[in-house]
Amino acid sequence: MADQLAVPGMPGPLVPSSAALWRIDEATGAVTVSAQPRTDIFIDPSGGAVDAAGNTEPGPEPVLNAATLLGTLPPEGDFQFSARVTVDFGATFDAGVLLIWRDERCWGKLCFEFSPEGEPMIVSVICRGVADDANAFVVADRSVWLRVSRIGRVYAYHAALDGRTWQLIRVFGFDGDISRDRVGFAGQSPTGDGCSATFDEIQFRAERLADLRDGS
Image (tube, rainbow, N blue to C red; front, side, top):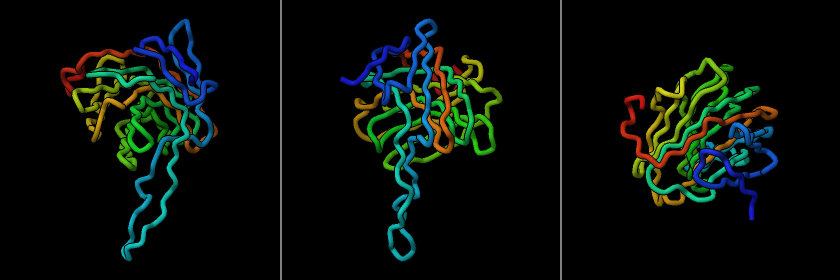
């Protein structure tokens, strides 16, 4: 049996990719990950492209080695999963992540990430075979609140600067059976020597989000 960690605010135990990389503060319920150097969850969309002559061009290999902490069972029905994310940024693309995970080719990341310009930013990445990459907005601080919601078969990503007024980042869906989709946390440092990310004020509510765009 893999290591399981109890995280206050979550509906059940979570399984870490490596227990040594995750720490839970029993007094506050905060979860901290030590993301290792050159780690990420990304499948470059340029892989497998076909050139004008019909030849398949090799692309970068998928990178799926980031530290993860995922629920043992997929949640049922509608939910809202949120946390304040604080990242000790050091290098481009360092990030703390709320993660939806079905398998290695179907997943979604909502990231608080260090941009190439050296600014904290909200970024979302959705993988349906290969990944996309979408930047939202710059954050002046080193902390922000992130939220993943499910409404029927649809997922919504939101971010909040104050933990109360939520800005819509993205709405999307996956094909197939959503009953396999697990949720949790991840930390990454694709270009750097590692970073630390802390998740606190963690909440999981089995409640439908009434409105995607009214800030609630």
